[in-house]
Image 1 (spheres, helix red, strand yellow):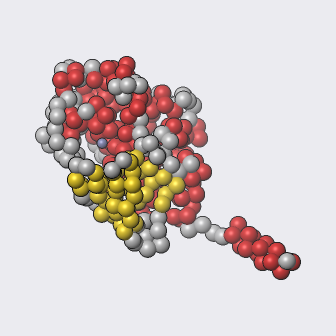
Image 2 (cartoon, rainbow, N blue to C red; image 1 turned 60 degrees about the vertical axis):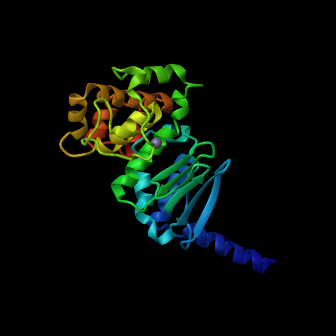
Image 3 (cartoon, rainbow, N blue to C red; image 1 turned 30 degrees about the vertical axis):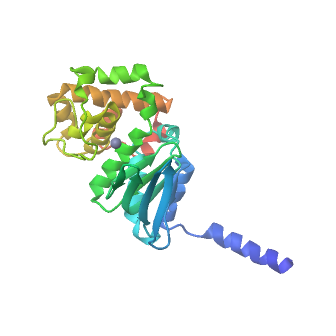
Length: 276
Ligand SMILES: [Zn+2]
């Protein structure tokens, strides 16, 4: 008994003294700051998860040793939002995976960038692609965790406000195939939208705007600022997105948040002095 206790203490002591590797330290911060777990495996293996009625996702797990960059990217990107905002999303787990596909009655879709499972608070992120795409996916999907805010059932008023930012109102949203993942901002983008894909629904529109706001605000040459000046409707959507972040955070966030994002002043430490 004494020996067991003795060994127990050594183990506990050793554990406490254990120096965190960068990835462990990052996971620790994500878990304590946002209540968020990141799921990684020792080895790559094939997994299939049920995510709803007749709906499942299949993927290969990403080995712990190979996910260092995505995990630190996730931490950096989440740090752009007020911690209260991230906690309000009820996001519990991010799984960094490869070869992500989804099966349902409609068939199988392969090579998906990301899948949010909002009810369970899960987010699957495919790290097969290029880093910018991964980062854009994070912001796009985080926005989907707020879809309830403008749902036809629960958030009718907010949905109306968003839809009416378009000069054409609801007619701006037409049915485009949901496999169009055109992310180009400057290509064939309709006025008021980030890309053709945004015209799919108000929810996709918001997700695309959030993605551009959070990734392009830091781009060189005042990219976002100039885009907002050129396209007033898109500019109004960016401001509405910031208003939404403020509202959900439940705290006063700086009036200069957008400017601070653009001048790269916003990082995790920014929120220590968050009051307006
Ligand atoms: Zn989407």
